[in-house]
Length: 485
Image 1 (cartoon, rainbow, N blue to C red):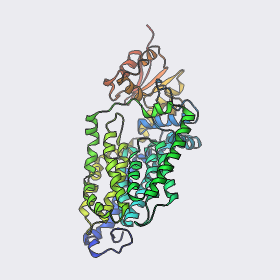
Image 2: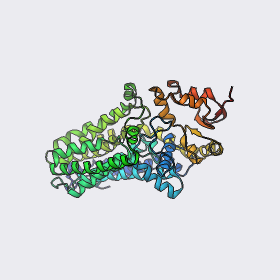
Image 3: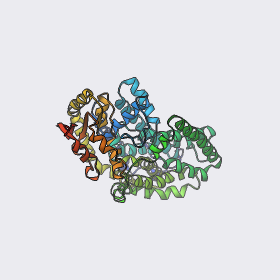
């Protein structure tokens, strides 16, 4: 890869900034090894892209929303309905359009998510490149890729909008990052970045760390750009709010902003606490960045991104059903801050790089085992899904799918959103469900046998009280109404 240079990207590397001789010799091999390992760990999900079997229960849910976005039902149903949508609309139209052209919403969503994840890696590279040099930028992209295929591997190429929304946020930072410390942010770049942020929020509304960090940074770095940022954001954001209100009325705000979801401090500690361990190398990077940002205000942004995204990610992880996608912003921020902090040191601290990679390295065995399982288990999963898809397709009357991908590939829409109803039952908001099930409203129900958290609410016991199992295979079952009387 050549020599590592220091801060700015245009400074000649001094001898004390060159890698120690053993590292210099090994560095190209280490980079090649890391690239091969990252490529292998991504193969499992890439192998599943064309498969008609869901990698995640969210895939079918998102496909169902994309179908409704194209007119096959209400995208934002009444809050008392047995289906729900707590996501903003933009991703459903993007995936819906591509899925309509390609013929499969889930496969289209997987491809969109993969491209968005790659776009985030490119954004990390460009941001670090503007704050250091090409070699450190490559390292930042590799740190991002390493965490993407280990900690965040469940979101590699799955039909989920989080990476698409995050890509909009990451590229907003690219647009706002001047190429040198003395350059002012242009009006056009500020307007474009504000538009990207609004688009990102219209994809996923929990992506607030980057917009907040940018706003604080502009307050200190460029007041003129801050004024343009705020005015543009208000204008574009206001137009977006007016548009969605004109289409869906107040229902969209009720569905998206106040969904039924339980939160737990214990869950936050158990699921969110590990994120703090990932930030240990960042603590070491803060000092050189903090000592240098007075001469280059651009350097304050990586620290602000971390300071807001880490606690926000931990808090969001306390919500029921919230997965590691709550950590996307923090991982992007980490991938920027660590190489920039290293580049600012008078001597390259290679032990930092080891610390930065250590959590990802610890996850490699688990990720490798899951990759092998994905590579060897795809055809079996597709084969196992076929009888459920066929049965749902032939059912005469309304159907319900715990895994909504089954309903989607059967050409049907699920009449129950299992997760939403579970959460509403926890809050005692779904009393209407019991008589609906008692009347044998559904001709066929597909349900996971080992349904997580069923003890916490009445959904599964209520279904079993009125429906009987007629087919079961691989932790999935089909249920029909019990005979009356």
